[in-house]
Image (cartoon, rainbow, N blue to C red; front, side, top):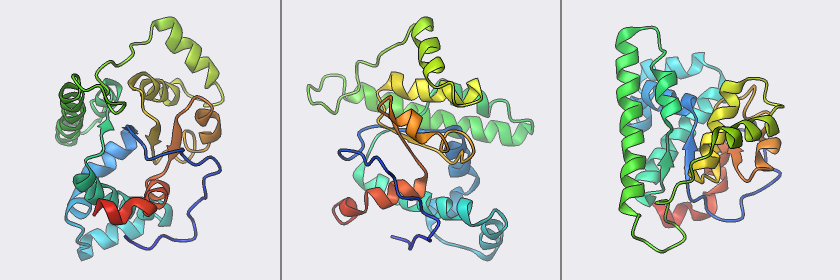
Length: 210
């Protein structure tokens, strides 16, 4: 596990147990693709080191944490969720080549989530996500109003998606809105964390997951 810097913020409301379903915010999906060579190979080439140094320490430490997240996730097999809304946001990328690559990558993650729910549909264990709740328009608007402290509807709706899917963790690098209002989101039963916070949280389990 990589050493984490002093910028890590201690969560005030720890999760009661190991997260069951992790919702990936659009910025997480984008960064998993943008920094995929480093995240997947865990090899910091000079060009990538220069790229990470240019984005600032907070983003850089979260990118390093995403590398740990993917590495341990491949061993632990924890489920992740990506919504169709995320694919729509990726599809709004202006550069055609980048848009195709991002949408393709996002679709792979969404397919992984769909496949997981299908595989668990006949299980009776608590860990099954076969019966996903589908909120009505009125329910979505109500939840959006509850989250009104988040200034933009585009920030509120992904959280509603996470609630609809039954996620108990919302992973984000949106520091100025979603992460800033994490305590308000936590009141709905979904904890918001940066990648580095999540990796710090699961550190007691890290030895078992390797």
